[in-house]
Length: 169
Image (cartoon, rainbow, N blue to C red):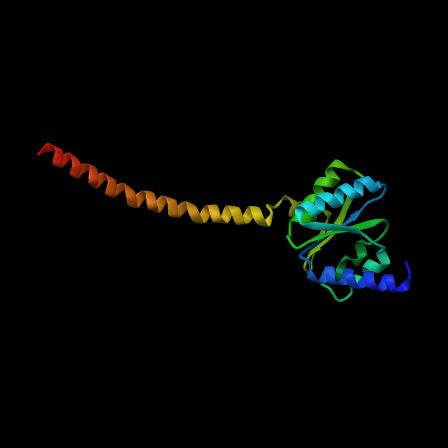
């Protein structure tokens, strides 16, 4: 990789760090190419990305972004998972690490909030943004359904009373 390619990679990574919601740092000692490809496929399916880059270049790319404090985690063979959904990257990384002991969660960050490995695991246990939206819509629709049922009930009871009175005469 020559100097111009390195500068281009640093620029791309800097844009990624400037525009993403969450970054998870992992150590991937001993992962095979097939395993990394599988991890990337799972990340893409969840709307996240996984990248392996030289630590020095990543640390240069962190400059001027809210994720600058993550530079301390870049020692040894590391990879970064990132996404705009605050939960997606953490969830996939933690699930993959449970199945494969060669991937270790080192830490991460959400904006300027630095997370340790336990913080990333806690973040992964939260429901995703789509799940939260679904729950919110369900909560909003439930009262409307109940109100419609309550409003309809007295009218139908009144109609039955009138029908019974009419059939009596």
